[in-house]
Length: 242
Image (cartoon, rainbow, N blue to C red):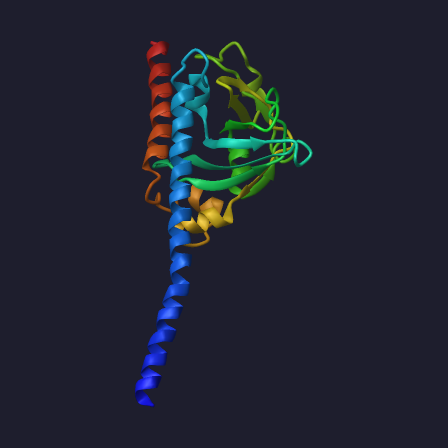
C-alpha cells in the first residue's frame, strides 16, 4: 500500500509539472515576442531616419520628450475601418531615456493608407503636457492630448504649427511612403499583459517612463536607437548654430 501511495504521489507530481510546463513555455514565448517588437521598433526608426531628406526633422528629435513606435499597426475594414496595434514608448529622464513601456493603440485614422495593410506608426511627444498624458497610462489623441501630422524632412524650421499647438506629432509609413498623419480619435493605453511579461510584474506607465524601473533584458537595441538619433539631432543643431 505504501509503495502504491508513493507511486501515485509521484505520478501526481509529474502531472502537475507537466501542466505547468506549457505556461512557462508560453511566458518565454511572450517575452521573446515583446523583445521582437522592441527590435522591430528600432528597425522602423533606423529605416525612417536613414532617409534624411524624408525622415523626422532633427528639430523634432532634439526637442522630443517621448518617442513611441508601433511597428506594423493593422488597418482594416473588419471593425468599421478600425486600426489596432501594439507598440513601445520611452521618455527622457534626468539620466537618459527611460525603460520601454508597452502600450496598445486602437481607433483613429491613418490617412492615406487603404485596405487591410499593416503600417508603421511613430508618435513624438513634444511637451510636458503631452508627457503627463502619456504617464497617465490611458488617453485619447485629439481629446486628452492635441495631435497633429508631423512635418517631414531634414529641417522643420519653416513649419511652426508643431511648435505652437501640438502635444503629439504623429507619422505613418506604408508601401515605402513616410508622411505626417493626424491620429485623431486613437486611444492609447498601457498594455498590462505585455508589461507583466516584460518586467515580471504589473508596473505603471509612470514608474517605467519616469526612470523608476531599470530597462529589462532585450531592450538595449531600441533604447540605443532612440538615444542615437536624439543625440545626433542635438549635435547637428549645435554645429549648425556656430
